[in-house]
Length: 114
Image: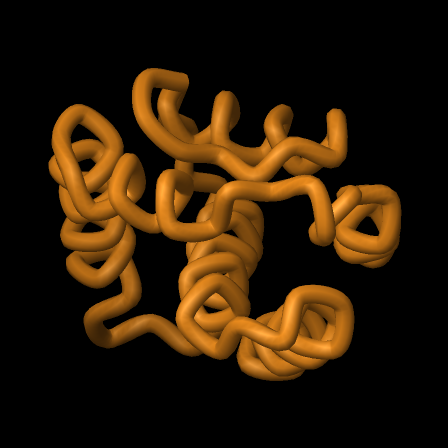
């Protein structure tokens, strides 16, 4: 996860149309897929003990906020990193979640169709 977090530094935030990205994330297909994966992971977490991923989320938030000065974008990306980290800890396999992680590996903020 550290390597993935470091990729956040490679994104050219000043060149982004943040409003467009946020709009695409809040619309389908992105929103419905994100929520589907979130619900499935939440269900898997019930009654299980596993490593807490909040530190990863915090690091993602701080990195993005420092670069973009946009708390909404930082929050969404932080949530993505929490989802990815929880998926790894729980050995949750999902094609869409894999595509989400690949976007970050390529220093791209995921939105719209992945």
